[in-house]
Amino acid sequence: MTRSEVVLVGVDGSAASLHALDWATAYAHRVGWALHIVCSYSLPSFTAASLDGGYAALDDTTIQEGAKAVLVEAENRVADAGVRATTEVATGDAAGVLVELSADYGLAVVGTRGRGGFTERLLGTVSSALPAHAKCPVVVVPLRAETNRGVSWTPPDLSSDGPAEVVAADTGTAPGVAEIREVRRIVVGVDGSPQAERALQHAIVQANAWGAELTAVTGVPVGNAGMLAWLPSSIDREQVLADIGAGMDVLVDRYEAENPGLRIRRIVLDGTGAELLTEFSTASDLVVVGSRGRGGFRGLLLGSTSQAVLHHAACPVLVVNKHCPD
Image 1 (tube, one colour):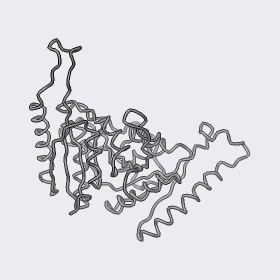
Image 2 (cartoon, helix red, strand yellow):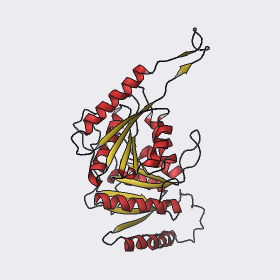
Image 3 (tube, helix red, strand yellow):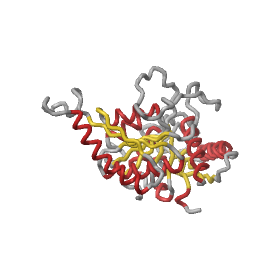
Image 4 (cartoon, helix red, strand yellow):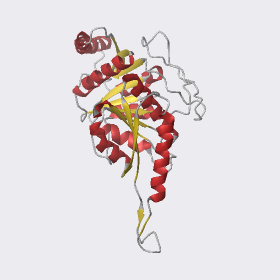
């Protein structure tokens, strides 16, 4: 087993991070990989301006013991999964630690809504920074306390089974939280860019690993409210969609030819990629997007599409940035 055949998982003791650990465990079991579970912490310090006693630093013993307790809980959680797992306590900012470690792993997994762990780590921050800067693909697993009731839009032709239901999990989490489900339906955003092509490549890897259906989606905002609304009224908008679809077919046909037995559905719709992928996530088990990884930790961390999908998707999102190996 090589280092690349290990899933890196960041945990902080929160329900969101443990939910992500469950997803990572299911994936590792599926593909025969191992897990490396990391809990990181950084020790705050206070200056004379905030403490009467001048400069003071906190002893990290208690916090370190808390991190170890989180890892013990994580180990117990995966003990019966038939997956080999190792653990590590790391010091430093969680996002920075995971980005640095990611170069040695085949996949990284984190959760969203990670607030509330032993040090109240904000996995919301990690789940934005890690996908932008990681050296491997990153899966961000959302913890949704609400169900999808009220969603009336159903993505067309995705599956005859209809939208995925949200099933209450008997795991001690909040009512309505979706249990970990086997990945059967994958959607990937394709827009003709090199980043999107790399996303398609990784989506194919995931489809083969899970034995899942794969759908490629392209969004073109040609409607009256879209960014292309300035097009002359004489322009046939249906023809614009057809032309975009023909271009996508060239790319998808090539990858189908390279992967005998794999069938990739193709859908071209009026709308932005972010809107469509978010909607499709309600009827999918995994959404795959490419990202240019713009900006730094304090700036815009991802492109607008991947950032929007991460914030609003109803299912796990796999982000492939420019730093990921081919």
